Every structure is written in C-alpha cells, then in structure tokens.
Length: 287
Image (cartoon, rainbow, N blue to C red; front, side):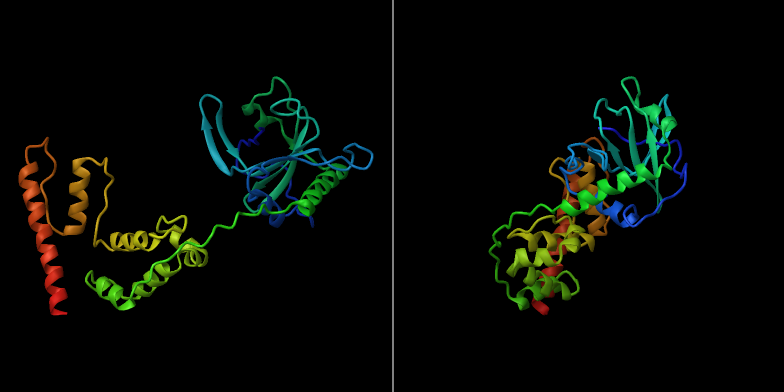
C-alpha cells in the first residue's frame, strides 16, 4: 500500500478547508477501524468514475523517519485517492495530507520504477476545482454509507460479593486511602458494568478487559504504585528482584555479585520481610 512522504513537516502548497475537506472529517477517517484502511467506492450511474475516485486509502502515520542513505522524511497522516491501482505508487494519485492542524491537497505520478523515497520530490499542489470536487464527492459517498461495525455483545461476567468493612480494614493495613475500598467492592460486584463505565481509568492500570479477578488486578496495581508491594517477571534477573525489594523495603540489600552474597542477602531479605509482616499483624491486632 502507498504511503506519503515529505522532506519536511510543513505545508508545501497552500492549506485547504471546505465543508467536506476539514479536520473533523479527516480525523474521523483516521480513526476508522480496520479493515477500512483501504476501500473501493462503487461506480456512478454510467458505470464509470467521473464524479468520484474508485479507491480511497487511509494512511495513518504522522511520524518522522530517517533512512540511510535516502535521508530524512516526514510521513503525514493522509487520505489517498486513485482510479487505477496499477503499481505500488499508482501512475496518478491524489492525497489530502495533515500538517499540524492544517490540510493540503497534492498529486503525484508514480509508476513501475518509482520508489518510496522518490515520492517526497514528486508531489505537486492541486488547484484544479474539478479534482477537488471529485475528492469531496468521494468522501461524501463514504461518509454517508459507512456504518460502524457492531461489536459482539459479551455476556456479563458474574461478580463477587465483598463486604465493604472487610475491604476497608484490609486497605487500612497498608496505610492506603480507604476510598479505594468502595471502588474495589463495586468492581468485584459487577466486573462488566464497572469496566464499561471506567474503561479509560482501568487501562491506565493495565486492565484492558473485564474479568472476575479484575478487582484483584486493580488492587495489585494501586499497591504497587504506592510502593507497598513490588512485582517482578518470573524470568527476571536476580539483581532485578533485589532492586524491587530495595524500592519497597526501605532498607539496603547487597547487590548481586556473581552469587557470592546470595545466602547473606537472602537472610537479610527474609528478616526484613518478616519485620514488615509482624508490623502489619501488630497494627491489625491493636486496631
């Protein structure tokens, strides 16, 4: 699929904005879900494509790229239009590119021997009103006919009933705000409903889908963020484990030194953790 290349991130011709070609519609198309990154529009009443383009391609980039020896390039977000899909870069194609908060329309002639790094030097401004109208008609046709694909409705996940007082007591053992307790109770009671209402917040805690154990993942996340617990991958190096324990323990442990101090370090770790557990237990008894 073709992509658009600029030498610099700047408008090379002149910005354009019309009732159809504007940032609102452009952004909407950029966010179109796959497989609508490339699609074909049906012919007009005469069976041809005089009023709109046959193929529209969405190129989601918006990034800088440095290639040796070809040089430095900027790949803008772009919508590409063409009638003949004859080469990787069609013999003639047009595109709308986004540069910052502006759009511009340009054209380029591709072909059999055109390489990707040639494109930055080939595209030219488009001022032909008939071409601009054809691009607008192409977008209008798609915007009218497009329907968001329906997501299959998953059955609600059965929840778990937790007592607010028990969760509050548990949270307080870690000197955490007890306000977390009501969230955990609601999350456990209705995993699907809570996820739907708080999806963006949960994603920040690396929770990307509802589950029966979602509240446990959340609890682990907030305890780790506050430095109350630490997690390490099961494949982690010994020094990573020591580093994590240093962060949550507030005590100095010996660094990994080719296994020479593993036994003494392990003893210190166990002693320190035992002290932590005893402090929690004593606080629970007194409270």
